[in-house]
Length: 247
Image (tube, rainbow, N blue to C red; front, side, top):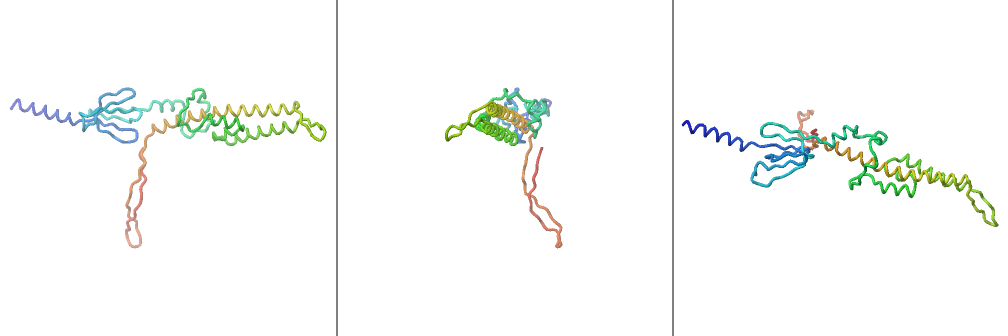
């Protein structure tokens, strides 16, 4: 009897340990019952609790919110990139004038997911000064550059010297016309460089905004709802839909 009792206790503890499991919660709210194998700076490896003899799975720490271990300890995963963005002073919904000084266009590297095209904006401004700014969402600035380029080009022809040669009038450039055309060329070059840099900076800002939005996980669900409304004939059932948002 003295031997059987300790053995029973050991078996009971072993059974509890075998059923103990870790709980992985992802940023999208989904959970995984698992047995954690290892946790590194980038990857968490685990086995599914209902199939411990099965394969080992891995998941990026960027997708994780918390791990609740069988011991009761909780490990919180913070988005380091989102923290860096916050420290830089970036918030959602900023105007270009508010964040342009926080970025350097030389730090830009092409990504196929970018919202703006530096090459497309530059080529557009090369063809017509100011069009690249319009593509970047700076409509008034683009119109100003376009009007300035076209206006100075036309003004250059207007101030040319007109010389009557037979039945024809020939235009000859002078200091005024050359100055107008140089001004139009300067605006066009400025428009090209500005359009490319603005597109790059806006893309860098949007990437940081995506990190911020990814770090703020939430669920939006629609579920049917049945309520009772007081009418002249008593309570009447009314069907509807409830919008539930979980932050």
